[in-house]
Structures are given as structure tokens and as C-alpha cells.
Length: 230
Image 1 (spheres, helix red, strand yellow):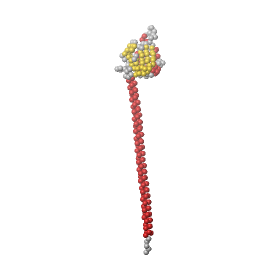
Image 2 (cartoon, helix red, strand yellow):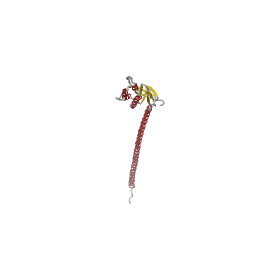
Image 3 (cartoon, helix red, strand yellow):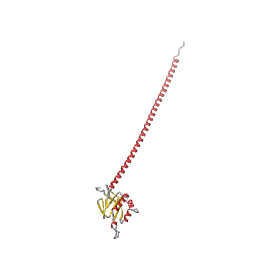
Image 4 (cartoon, helix red, strand yellow):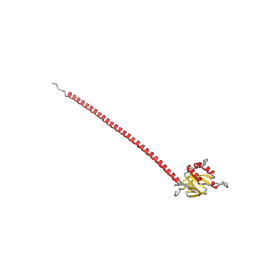
């Protein structure tokens, strides 16, 4: 029986163990790399899902922002309309107060003077040369129609319910008597007011044909105080 050499037995055994260790190490490394890849992929997938969810939330917030901007824009439009409405109401109120004679007014305008006619025959009817209330009415109405903001006769301001009555050589305005000549002052655009009076066949021509002395002057600064107790 041959004697077994110890070196020959040990060397193969070492090779087997070494091969096993290498194989085990390779498998362990491969599993570790695979686990690392799986973990990285899971992390990337989770991040992508979060990004998608964040984009959805951003789009939702953007829609809400656009809706709120539209609401704010509509509110601004409504406020602008209300502001214009209040401005118009205030302007109309001021105009009505001016028409009623409740506020002081000043500005440029016209001064129309009506005087009794003097160029008459000895046998003429003197009454046909006097200024009557209808003459004053015609001038006042034409001035208002042409845009006069306020009118006064001999310094007495007229309001919405003023009355004029002829009583011989004088006229009575709201209970106050005024003799001729009658100075009618009006605040407004002097060019517009003057043009309306001077139309062919208009008020000036009519009164001149009725023997009334009719003069017109532009005024730069006419002031009317408010009517006390009116």
C-alpha cells in the first residue's frame, strides 16, 4: 500500500476552497450591485412620481391664480364703473344745485342789455317801444337753450321757478321790481351764446325789429352768489 503525500491532498483542497470563496464573493458582489441598482431605480421612480405630483399641483395652483386674477380684474372694472357712476351723479347734482341757485358760480359769459327804443314818431304808440317781459323771456330762454349755466337780470339771479311780470315801465322778478334798462348776464361759452342770439331771424333781429335797443358784450368774469332762502 502506497503512502499518500500530504502536499498533494492539501493543494487541491485549497483550490476548491479558494474557488468556492471566489464564486461566493462574485455572487455576493453581483447581488449587491443588483440590489444597489434596484434601490437607485426605486429612488428615481419615487422622485419622478413626486415631480409629476408637484407639476399637477403647480397646474392646479396656476389655474386658481388665473381665476383669481380674472375675479380681481372684474372687481376693478366694477369699481371703475361705480366710480364713473358716482362721478356722473356728483356732476349732475352740482349742475342741478347750480340750476336751483344753491351754489356760487363764476365764469365767462355774455351780458345782454335791453333798452327802450328812442327813435319814435310823435304819433307813435310809446308802448311799442318799451321792453316787456316777453322780450326778456325770449333772451333768457335762448341763453338757457344755448347752454347757459346760470342767468341773472339786473344782478338778480334766476332759479328754476322764477317768474317775471311786466308792470308798466318796470318788470317784477320773484317779487322784486327792476326798471329798464334790463341787463341780462349769463355764464357760459360766450361764443356759443353770442352766436345763438345773433342767428339770422333770431332773438336779436326779432327784438331790434320791435324797436328794442339790443347790445351784447362778452364778459370774462361773471360771479353769481347763491340765492338766499330760495
